Length: 146
Ligand SMILES: [Zn+2]
Image 1 (tube, rainbow, N blue to C red):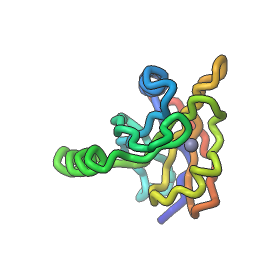
Image 2: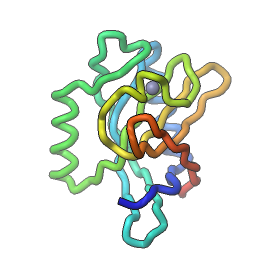
Image 3: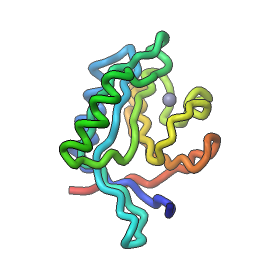
């Protein structure tokens, strides 16, 4: 598989994702990203055009997340049924920066594109990463899409 070079995200979607994660404080919010991965044209671009929250099943959900298995299976099959493409995952850091935590590095969900939503007061932001191996999180630029 080719490299991902950028993630496209509209301002509206970014705002929606930030407020969705904000509403679930003090817990981490997690879910999947829908969109399109442009492999064939060589641009390595991922366009995110939607997301869905999956219940956080972690026993310490203020500082970690794990997908609720039923939700995750449901979302996965709904995506296939509706021909929506899952391009990655997102989760929030209620207290921390938008950098991957040690726990994130240990987590083994094998998807390539990750968004981390930082809800640190005064500095809410989203950062994008490609994960090429468990300990290798490569920062990706977020491009503003209409
Ligand atoms: Zn994290």
